[in-house]
Image (cartoon, rainbow, N blue to C red; front, side, top):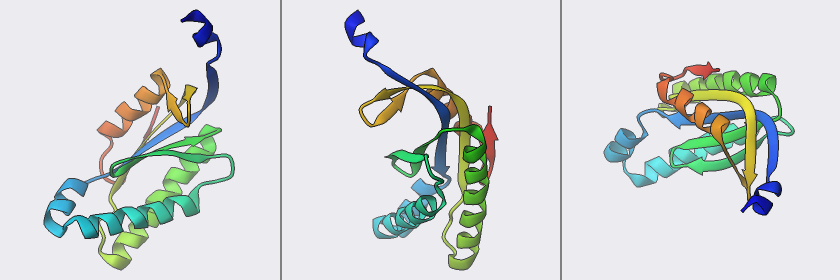
Length: 137
């Protein structure tokens, strides 16, 4: 067990969780096909905004876990995404009301995922954000 722990890779960076507010209701009212389209549009906007060195770690239903090498690029990306989502929502009528939770710290790499206390903190931060809010520790 201790030998296994010695192999752990730990990185420092900013974890960002996103959550698409109202997605469950949207899916119930509009159906799965529209929900999939909404998620696809979210993916396009996020992928276009990610700066060099950052990455999409995983999709979490209607939310995302993103990683950034520094806090500044994470915050700038969240603000940029907030603006992109607002423009898209106004242009298409799609409810892209996204909330963001950011936390800088250490993450343990597990395969292609990040785990650990600082990841958990970021997850708790997004839970208290309102639609369109960017909260950070």
